[in-house]
Image 1 (spheres, rainbow over the protein chains, first blue to last red):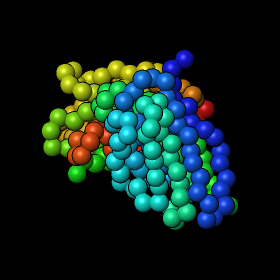
Image 2 (image 1 turned 120 degrees about the horizontal axis):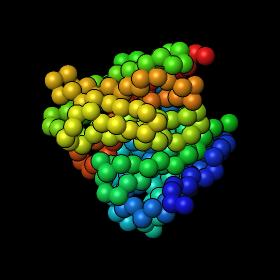
Image 3 (image 1 turned 90 degrees about the vertical axis):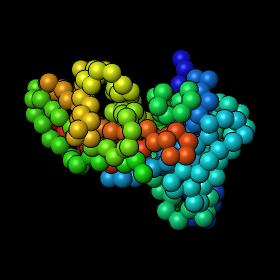
Length: 113
Length: 114
């Protein structure tokens, strides 16, 4: 079945450590996105990529980094520079741009301990 | 800048009652509008979308939404809710500032009373 797979579902990190969240899609979508979700704040865009080897900062990119070396993969690294990393992270993809409908993964809950 | 407002943070309705979730958007041109639903700890699922044409759009799970340009609204409705409809609902608009992406409202959490 086609879809988006995020792993792991739960992740714990010590303060000062970098951690990478995985996002893989087999929908042959060009565009991929990372959102952060906090209670009562909806979804906020961290990074997005519309084509391999290219990506742009979203609204809250500070403390995060991404890569897009393959069409199907868009990993997100939460660096130690992110001051409040505990959140629910959602990856999404779409054919070309969000207006064609974005498909979401099941999310990764990151907790800093 | 495009923005989406969902005025109701939390709504409680009884099972079998009708439902309306409000969404207002700020956008200069004809917007592309979406409603997504999220069960606890899960990703988002698309309920319906509006691009153009008929202003009343039908979605999955018995939901519908009406686009009203004069009110800048895209409210979600369901005639009779089921306990399984309890979830969080997000309205979104496509943003074309920079690259195409979605701008989400803050969400409305729906609780169903038995």
